[in-house]
Length: 165
Image: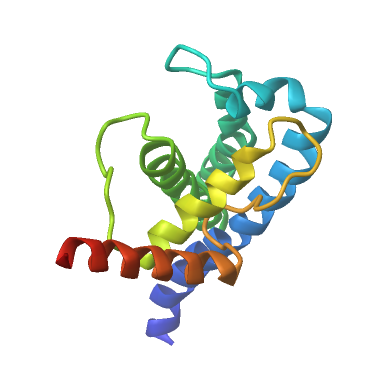
């Protein structure tokens, strides 16, 4: 029974993190490419500057996370703290993967030989081919269609072949 006490928070955090990918997909497809396109549009167009209106979307995830932390703490440290932790962990992953790795807002993590990371980057590039709110594809961040893994493997093989001479 003691193990369950320690395992439960971890399971809640992991489950919340996984669910957040689905929440992010739905939010991206139906809100960002729908009613809230005004805030997301500049993300699909190269414009000068570091910040975008699109950056306001972090509030969609930060507010529920903060609410879970606050109400969970007020209730004596219940499960809501772990839900808030899962949401915050997904937010951190989003920042690292989307903003730093994919869009290279900071000049680190530029090259990779990891098939999974190459597939994520390729799927996101395909998503950005569409400069309008219609006809979009690949709305997720961490789960991408298998065809991008195949393309990443093919690209890696070609890169290795060309480096061998």
